[in-house]
Image (cartoon, rainbow, N blue to C red):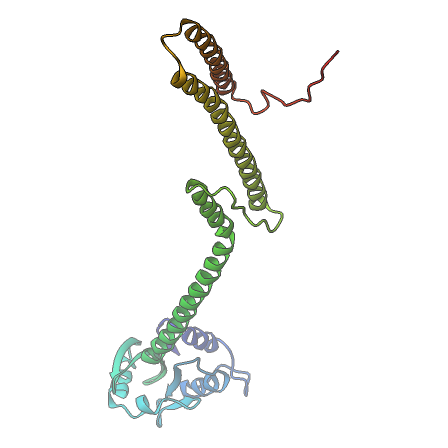
Length: 284
């Protein structure tokens, strides 16, 4: 009994069975038809496959339900007959369906049987397309869900940063009363607390600066008012009045000079605690 080789797994199993004995007699198979019958009884086709035995005598047999479309196709039978003696594979198209037909010939004397495997390529590709479509839809849905979760998480994480930006923008507009709402105990919360502390120091510094400017303005306004008042009532024809007014004006100018020098010293010091207020004590 001789055979030629083609590639599918069923063909390999069929060739292995050729080297075994007939399970009924315990002896080598006495005919190709008997070998075909035993193999078909032992094996079931995979999805989109069909197993056929083209016997030397009688019509073809098949395992399982078979494929009615290809069983009744003259093109299928013609392909099997063409490859029955040489073996091999071919692709045929029946009613828009593509099939891969693989033939393993079995020769005994002058008669030739054939083991045939058909694979429905169109159905297999359709299943693959459905799988790929399902995978693509699941992938797209996963991307949308992940993007939504990432956007929501990023929004929560960046919310303190946006509050920091808005508060800083308010400071640029002159509003020093805004503060960040601190929630949590993470690094962003520590940044919020530090920023609030900075705002407290800035507000305190600006309040102190305004107070200093108000005090300095008041102190400068007083001698200027005195100077104007005395100059307005000065009698230039009275030497005594001119001398007295001159002495008074020089005192006021000295006072203004000391005040300006003190302001310049505070500006150069650049320290808020350069001058501290203490209660003065008088000794008798």
